[in-house]
Length: 257
Image 1 (tube, rainbow, N blue to C red):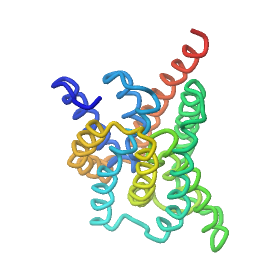
Image 2 (image 1 turned 90 degrees about the horizontal axis):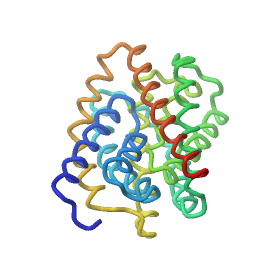
Image 3 (image 1 turned 180 degrees about the vertical axis):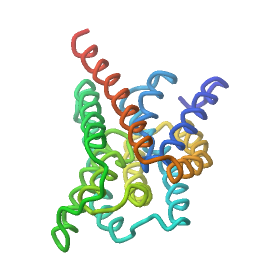
């Protein structure tokens, strides 16, 4: 797909805009929305959809990190430990993309979204399980897992990092979102480069969608800081569960068709 039609450009712009709003609102890259919409609206290959999504996430995450930094809602200490794991995890995840079957990829994606949604609905209160060296090692491990899922599934990893920072590092929800976007910049770049070397990324879509999400992310940040936490968490969980169900159905259909 070297050249996009007018309708494809419009759809790509809309997908990027929606992903940008969700990135700013929830501290995620927006890949959990972009991947299924790339499949449904642009009809591109599943694995290329995951890789292209990760490429589009980079400018969105940069804009979001700048926005949250301006409001003082980034914990750079936590970000550095998470990035230490996620940078290498994203490279590892990109390698896994060529070894995992399509139905299994869809099932993993669905399961990850479901677990994240349930965890958010259960509790979003800041809790610090461990601190000191153990806390730092936990953040590195969380970062590696989030980075692996980022490279594999084309998501930023925020759906893993944001809940983890709230329940493990004791960060409030807004700071966790800002910190997540700062980390996604690094893991997104490393994962995108790994996919680029394998020829997985459709750059016209990644560039156009990413740029469309840049102004939208500031709208998301505004909403994040003004919506009641209970409402924003409920919306996020509903979106995750909806997409998880769609991916689960596709996995079952692919295996038994």
